[in-house]
Image (cartoon, rainbow, N blue to C red):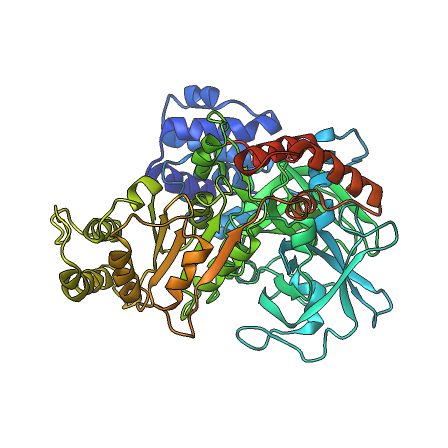
Length: 631
């Protein structure tokens, strides 16, 4: 079926009248998607239309319909519009569907040609994290693919484990006993222990974290015609397993999914009904943003459902759903990761948040000061986070609603990374509505409590004429009984949102050396802390208070809320090995290689401590080809 003159006239008028539409936007869009079909360039069409923009749009739509790229054209125009409105929600659906007929012919030509080594690099990065789900109760035991997205979280297609989830409930629930005999196996290089010896995990006791129903009736019936159903059902399951394998072999990060652009490369990786893992790459034909579906030509096989769909940078852009046949043509369909991520974010607690997961890298945009402190002022790449796992876990617990964990005390030798704690907190809280205030050593040692309140109040949004400005230090009685209570009440009001909930206020006070405040300040700080930590919205981290003086803080907290103490030890091989294994997937069945790596590192850092030791470790990681992404 082709478009009628009325269809073209209506669609052209809607495009012409859309806000932000210009000749240049349409020209760039038409020439980009028309290049593939070798159609006329827009300049020619525009000239033949006597520079009548509406007539030119009509002719271009006719060309697009004849060559099967109407929806591609609408998507490209949407991308180029200043406001990026999706024109596919403006042009009537029936017109788009009419133009779609025949779009997917010859999708799977002979694809045995050469492929770029770029693809091998992509697959090499992700293969340790790709697993296969095995149900020993079935004749065909290997039922589908999954991939690690958290320390103990896997993502798969919902139709792979359809019989284990009750989608009649809202939200979906686990079917009791349905996972008996089910396990997840990681067979690939870097994920397994040794050849023919996979890492194995079972589903956790409370295993279903989130899910969205498939389209159609699994395992064979994929409903590809119901657009309303596709827009609602995104065919995924986020599952918790009983072992934190992701901490050992790494994860595929889907916290902020990348967009998927048409006519770019797409790589699908998955297990084809057994322990062997396969991949194929081809062009992404369509990105149907209305339904969150990707149409592509990458070849797949039974068992690859739930596999990761990647771009050329090894970023997860989708999850493989199935194959569609339409009028003799055939194409593969995947679910874009962005609508899946939106649904996961709607949970009461986001399991993929930086607060919930263990960070291995400090983003380049937040790492400038950390690189400078190590003597690398010109480096613009991610900064490795080696160790500090217990502190990260404390931040996760302290960030939970109702948590009684409100104070952490960090100590360590010079150059051990106490100041880095502030950058680590900022990264962990990057997607939180909370407010983080950092007090540097040169300020922390000299600041007064009124000065501190001034900083907190400004961070929380108070005007310049705040009541906490003071040129002189008040006496301790006035401080304790008047100024501190008044300041906390004001902060309480500033942090209260319109619906009555409050933002948390995190205070990181860095005293630098393990000594503490200057003489005369201790009583002031204790007066502030004793009252501030009674507020459920306050979290305080103090660096540079020696272990010997940390006992003083126990007196200001109840027995239910003892401070979290962290003494940053000298960097050791155990922390380095854990970081290497998380980024490379470990060393498979070769204890000699582990021993050689340890020997090399220990030789490199011998006689060093603090920053110098960490700098030597950076050189070691570079030799191991573990480097962060550049900004």
